[in-house]
Length: 495
Image (cartoon, rainbow, N blue to C red):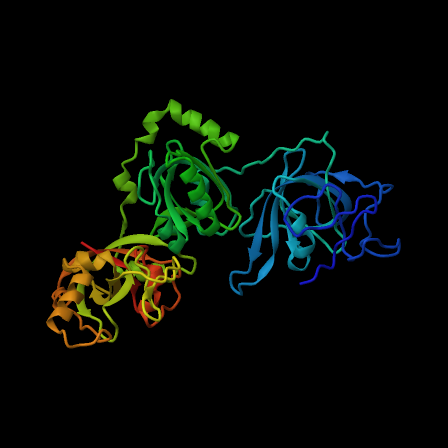
């Protein structure tokens, strides 16, 4: 895409370098010429122009010839979740009166402005359109959004006499999130103290499994505010990696967390908060709000140990019917459940194991002479057999298919997959390495057993799973299956 919208003030010519940043003398218009005549639309700002300066509270619906001045708090990409098409760039802006408003740059104007934007920098914007804020996933109180229009002119603000706050948060508590659950409404910020990180209590030297997080693209937290109930947090993608970096820098000892623009949802009847593309993470001493909360926590140490960690990590007890209902929830994401079911059969037509990397359990790929791990880019690895078995199960009213992966298979049979494969080849040394190893008796013997299964529903709930489950083993092992098909539930641990 070629830029159509760059103009520059004659007395302060700037050559864009392609990097995100703010140029103090930069003037951006919409005609793609270094200078324009007075009759051209989208002309550059000249020194004799006097613009009426307004604040965010004065922004109304419709076109504006006025000027707004602000600090850019944050910006992120806006995508259409259905078509996977980039719509534009959304922004969070704050003015000198501490009012916060949402901004928007349409797709066709991204190239013009994005390279000159820098989080924390201050700007002037002349000529814009006040559009109605979207009714879903709103990140600021204002009902108006500042949209960059065809003739908008953006410039860096050099006036040092104007003071802007660095940030302003929209913090709410458990009650507001409870009321807004599954409504796709306003996205509030939340602050509290960390109970668990991926099931572990924070403390000196706590290390997160970064390889697992890279595969699952998420971090699961349990967080509590004061005396409110504990809430589950699911941090996704960039937000998860941002948390990991900050948590690692704290040595695993971070105690307070502030996450912005969280979406409240119910998974298995339990309220949880999920991060969005607009979310940001702050720990302990990052901002004034976390510092104040940390001070309060230090004065109320009994609060930190008030909740039993076994209670907050206990999976929701459900029936197979409940699992199917959850699967049909279009926006459902990762969650853990416990159900009791009887093993009816071992599914035929697919292998019961796969060969994975001995370190990360990612499905190994065949090279010219060796096995390779595509996750770490290693060209020579030791392959180890891992469980990937389909079990038909039922309870009092429903039937499903569980895909048992990795260590769950060992819990079910009491035998490692590698041990069973090795025994077979020892007893049948004339078969080739490509021979299909039949389902071992140790798995067949589980038919008729009633067991408790800890089931993890994956991130693609409601989508049809691939018919060859082993193709997804590299994304599923250790963190659960990547999806749920119409045939049943993936990833079960047995007890």
